[in-house]
Image (tube, rainbow, N blue to C red):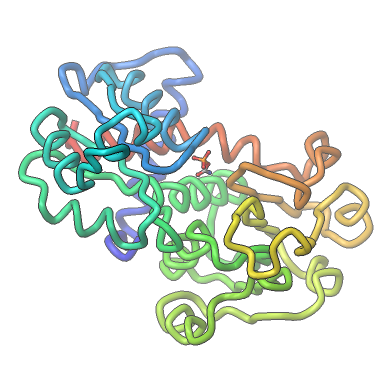
Amino acid sequence: MRQYGREDLELLFRTADVMADRLQRAFLRRPLDGRIMMTAFFEPSTRTRLVHETAMLRLGGTVSGFADPSVTRAEGSTAESDEDILRMLDSYADVIVLRHPTTGRPAELAARLTGALLINGGDGTGEHPTQAMVDLYTLYRRFGSIDGLRLLLVNDLRMRCVNSLLLGLRNFDCEVSAVATDGMDRPEGEEADWASDGPPVTIGGSVVELLPKVDVLYSSPTVSLRSAAGDRTRPLTIDRRLLEEHAGRHLAVLHPLPRKGELATDVDDTPFNAYWAQATYGVAVRMALLTLMFDA
Ligand code: CP
């Protein structure tokens, strides 16, 4: 997300508006006709892989790739390196979407590509930049402006979606509070980097006391196996009762999904629910990103 400034993000939002409108009217140009996307997912995914493939297909491009490295030579007796695999995809495709378990690996591999563009689909505990673009676009659509918003981030603050969201938010004038679930705090020493790179973040406090004062409640997923406290960790559960008792009426709940116990399904049918719209905007935002990357 450090690659993108406010102007880039606002251009992305405007382009995503055009894409969302075209999707609604089933009017689609095919500016990426003849382009090929390869999805290289070394970790599981429901949304990120399929939404990039959907966006590419909607723009007239074609897609191939793998959702599981076990179908490649990466595993088993050959144990082909990720670098060699990416070298092959580089010669086949115009754009690669890569999800990788090692933090920083997409950037390292991108630097070695000679032809294809690379989109980071999530790396270890590093970043998930296109998720942050979707999160920011959702705020822009819901509130008209990101400036002036007060956000409360809860649950697993170590997640890559949180890192990227904070980096994205530094382009806007907003207030951020964060309350971690036990065992899901930022690793020691990272707060300084986080604070210097992003907006001022107030860490800790009572969710019940903060809730009436914020516009956005953002929960990260708690499905991570990286919990220091293991299965005994209990996340904050966002449910209808909590919101109706403590939140302002205009509050938007965002969640990048997948959800577990931290976001109850009884929120789905309330006006607080912004997360299904957020998931749906994923298509228009990736269409906008691809269109801009290819200058199409
Ligand atoms: N939000 C998100 O990254 O979901 P997936 O892990 O299913 O791609």
